[in-house]
Length: 334
Image 1 (tube, helix red, strand yellow):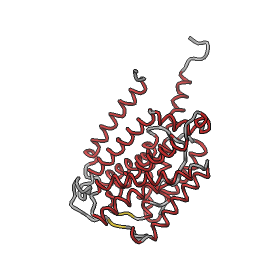
Image 2 (tube, helix red, strand yellow):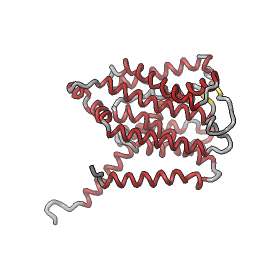
Image 3 (cartoon, helix red, strand yellow):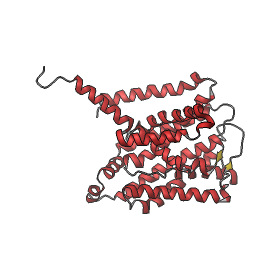
Image 4 (cartoon, one colour):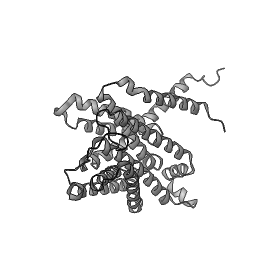
């Protein structure tokens, strides 16, 4: 089966873009701020892709996905701190535990529809956040510090040169994006879109929407667990406010929604816009403008909901379609 010209064009652009990103640290040189920002773009784009599985393709809008990111971060951090487990060995459990938790959470929550489901995911995430702030074994509100070890790939720690974190985050994004592309072309991807478009019609055909939503929820949480492990090793510190806070859940959803939920490039575009916006706003306003970035996020949510619900990808498609219509000959013209 031959690929369409647009697919080939997209593939070529993706390869060129990946080559540019691989070489980018050479251009950045010794500018740690830009390197850190690029690393965060990759990490948050991966988190947006995770939400996209359940929210974009499955149509189940969750505002509690920070829970799974936080569980992944805490699992790997606690395994390292309490039991001396290497983070690479702890990562599988940090992926598995959020997936299992998401499956359990989905059993009652998927019985709800619309804004009731949104509220339920938010309540569950907030309840876990409150538990972790008073649970002494996980450090409570103070959090826990991951022991500093000899830097290197074996210990997943790099102290002087942060470039390896950049490549790890880029590799994670490429791997996850490739997996979601495969998912979108698979039978499961088509069934998830069917759940999003008409759940009752899918049930009438003998399929179980609950089953496919649970699978999507588990996959989404597993990706966030891996992202949480990376974050814990990147900052070597985990506390409830930084990995389980409500703003994390909002951001995870916003990356995909701003870029275009249900599209492959949407979360990447959303992160590429929002992360620099957040970082530069913090520099511009400093201490006098604390949480200005959150106000900007809130404003963007209102704008997207009112004027551009399909995100940046939808806006681009409409723009291209409008140009094509203007360039097409009028009816009757030769």
